[in-house]
Image 1 (cartoon, helix red, strand yellow):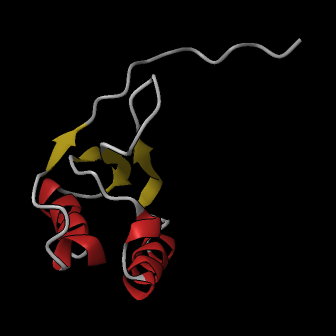
Image 2 (image 1 turned 90 degrees about the horizontal axis):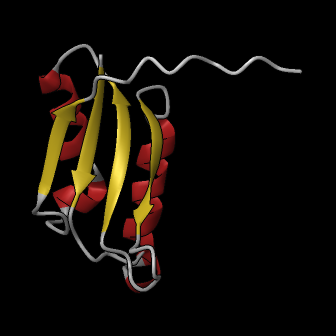
Length: 98
């Protein structure tokens, strides 16, 4: 099943302890078979990060939540406002190549 994790925070990796940031990105890489996309969110007009979004492939919601909870940023208490949602992707047909 596919899930989306949303983290509502103002973290900027360049402002954090480099070892913690390295551990976070190593965690993403180590779980890239299940965290299929991840990235920071900013307002359209620019400015500071306001959150992060992950797309997760997991068997159950509990598995997705466990993956989120074990992220080094979460373990360090830097992401207290986080949510996991089941994601039902819309059936958008692929465009034919010309």
